Image (tube, rainbow, N blue to C red; front, top):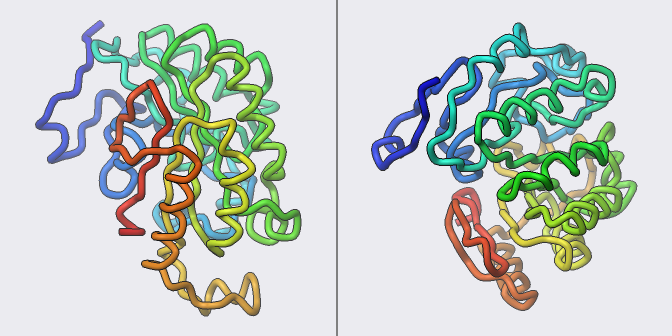
Length: 273
């Protein structure tokens, strides 16, 4: 099968390597050079800040009734072989470990297909993968497990991320992954209340190698207050300085899209610059 490789030209325009594998554009490109479509259309986590239903032209009610991506298993069979095994991001359009995964296990199928083709995987989730999936990733050096953290409190999680695993459980996932030698990361995005993000960062910092930070930027304050009345306006330049100061204090250094494997690094996304 034909090998797939990235070069400098790919930075200028999107590429599609097969019906599932693509190069993300815009802000998504700050997270990964390649991504996988699916495995689900919709998400049962019901995060209130999720922007994807609008991008997919789906109502929120439709989005909360996820289903498998059409012909996902068949399309996996045509994955190209990796010449440059950069991590493939799973997933921008849904959470790979939402409740439906427990029954269908399409994320597990995707992991097996990508790893067999020589790719590495960068998982981002607010769910909890089965331990056997962590064991599979651990057997393939270069794979990564990231979690999203926007705060620590149960009230915050139930208000903004009602169907997702609790933040403390996500931090335990980081610990489980690192114990297996898996590279870990935190998506500190969206920052809704900077003090809450900082609290989560401090608790999780010992269990991660990389932190990406981005603001809540597609919500008006009025809309956010519909979810959490009483939210105060955020001075975003000051919040960025405060978060970056704390990251440096915790031993993280700034870097780009593909951080070195040694050391601890962070990325401030364009939304916060």
